[in-house]
Image (cartoon, rainbow, N blue to C red; front, side, top):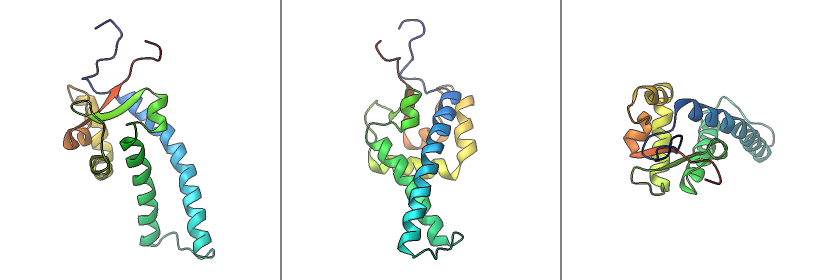
Length: 143
C-alpha cells in the first residue's frame, strides 16, 4: 500500500466521523423542519411538541434518514463529503436490518460509542463492533 493511501481495514478517524456528523446534523435539521411542518398540516396547527407521539415520529424520521442512506450506498451526504462509507466487516453493503440496529445502538450510547473510536486499535466505534460494521475512509477521487 502506498504511503498516504487509506487502509480499508482500519476504521475512519474520529475527527472525520464528527465532521460528517455535523454536516448531517444540518441536513437533518432541515428535514425535521419539513417533518414538523407536515405534522402540523395534518393536525391543523394544533400539535403538542412535547407529546410522546410527536417525539417518536421525529425519532423515526432521523432513524429512516440514516438507515436509508446506509442501506443505499453506505453513505449519508456528510459521509460522502468526508469520503467515508459504512460497510459490513467483510466489505459488503449494509442492509436495512443492520442499518436500523446500528442506529439504535448508536442512539443508546451516543458519546461513549463514538469516543470508543479513539481507543479502539482498529478505530471502530462501539456500534460498529456490536453490529459488525465499519466506517472506512475512501481514497481521494481520481486515485
